[in-house]
Length: 132
Image (cartoon, rainbow, N blue to C red):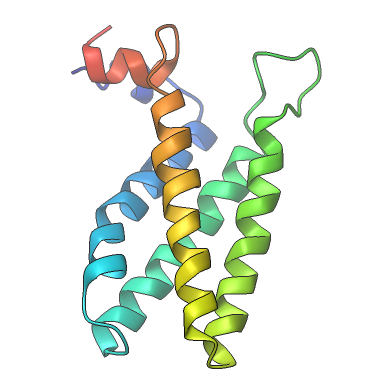
């Protein structure tokens, strides 16, 4: 493992990675901890803020796979932001099953699946994890 690629990356990339790490660390507590508690609410709010900052910061990161700034991955940022809004709205309206479903889908698709794609050889996180 080497943090050198991350430390030499632009600030927006560093913010993006830090907020992703926060969200990943909180995900087990949020998904499998007791629901309706103060801990769940605080963890959930922190997770939502981390995911929102992650999505917003990704909009400032250029896609290396297309000739324009925004690439297909940026669609995910919009999906994440709208999903966060829907999940919060569902919880506030008492639609807990819908809230739970959206949050689980967000955790799976935006953290697990896209996280796996960051570990493709040639990507910065691959270099961070493998040491270069």
